Length: 321
Image 1: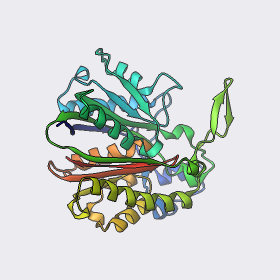
Image 2: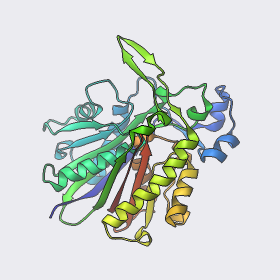
Image 3: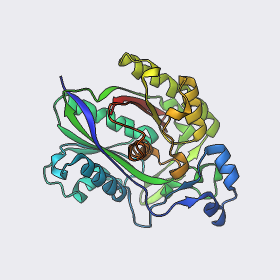
Image 4: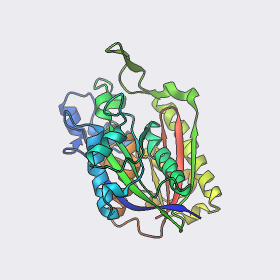
């Protein structure tokens, strides 16, 4: 029987940290205390002018490949999650493929599920490997959310940042990814969305992130706890078997509330939101790579990754590292 295992991780945050005080200095009507107490965010990173999602993905991907001791052409599938692609088309995944210098014509495609995009991408790649359609997959989350922020809306512009995270999955006889579960409910789309589009060469509608914060918080805490139990039940494991919860890094209050619902102490939650804010599809692989680099996450441990994003979309992946 075939399974898939993580054999390498990598991440990248562009530029220098932009602190809350830096945002105040730029003229945003807020304060370090206001942001920290409501979100737990202390800093975020913004891509330079002309720096795109594929550029951030490239750095994270190279680091993951190096850790996995793989060459680019050892990869026979790329699944890239992003809500801020380089272009309308081609896909950012194919642009990453070209920048990596890949010549093996492996399939490469984007996934758009906003902040749960990495979970969607991971679940898809896992199924490709289990079915024997690929042997090694590069799974990436990359975002440049700074391009779609309204700097006059302090309820959203202080929350987001840019970044990328990547993993290399390899087919194996030993279980790595134990269970995945994906959901969506489009009835909630207007609670977190960018209600604009490009048409006839012009922006039509509102091109910035808009969010109903309280509605998102309430829904997120409920469904993240539910989907966590779903994947645990699929793997026939109790909550107590978890070594680490690695949730989407959106808001420290959501992290805390989710852990409480699951009965997990905060000491078993990987939290990096203070360092980079909400990086959407990049946040889970960023937190995963950080936890590994800092020596918290060790081989043999059981991890629960989960996220929720605009749509609403949400999902979870249970794995043994």
